[in-house]
View (tube, rainbow, N blue to C red):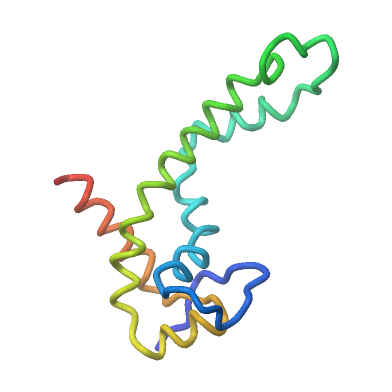
Length: 125
């Protein structure tokens, strides 16, 4: 068995929740990386580069608030597309992979490719 590519930070082992929920929590860091479109990065940098001061209080989010919002919405919306595929693919975990997920928060290396494939299938329906 291959050990996983994802490991959640601050993992609390053996919590009494469903495996699909644990899989989602373990997968979110990698899925967030995959969900961020390339064009959202400059918007986040632009949104963080300008200091917010009292003269910009009348503008929601300051002068770059809209750039920041667009970048966050783009990555957040794409992250949501992974929710159901993670749930479906988590059902394919073997008992050993489930034990590793529960104890360490690690997912097998095949997991993310299967999630991507499931997402593509659902998108094309």
